[in-house]
Length: 220
Picture 1 (cartoon, one colour):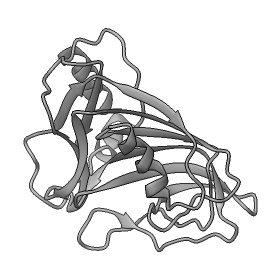
Picture 2 (cartoon, helix red, strand yellow):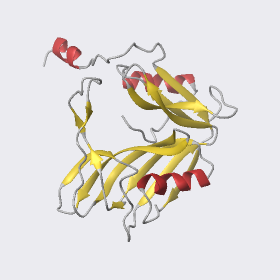
Picture 3 (cartoon, rainbow, N blue to C red):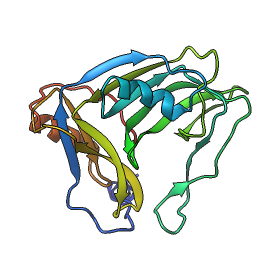
Picture 4 (cartoon, rainbow, N blue to C red):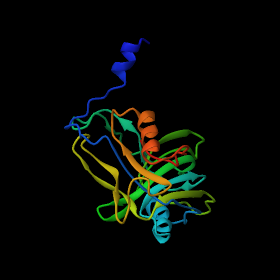
């Protein structure tokens, strides 16, 4: 495809006013730990109870081998007239699924611990699919041996607030204690739509004095 056509395809016009703040980021000292999500808990509780207990306010959780049953998810779908794209109907595969790999952002929504998770999984019939897991409607299955790897900050949360530009409720970093540019080895960031991803990440590294960095996870 020509460069002109590719350029046109790369830009999606959002329905609301363009925010002047394209990248929002705060740094702190990283805390990382591994845990096994507790069977019988709703997915949101199985992921956030351990992170809250460790004192983490916000960050990311990498997922591996976690079985969910019941399991509920949605995938991207056409515009509903309010957003440029929206969610599909809810899918509920019989027999649940096992997550092969996934990433969840954790923080707070309406004052309560919350996660936003995208993953790839294998369903009971062998089908391999991907999408957005509904965290309150999916439950960690009995006998699961999956693992979760959390990395986050004590002094910065990811808070879900209404975003006028996209008309969605989106996570963005919010300090809840002393913080500042270059004050730690982990940065929590929101990179807004139509911002070139790699240039923004490189700029964040320069801003926070990182010569090398690893992307711990995220949802987009």
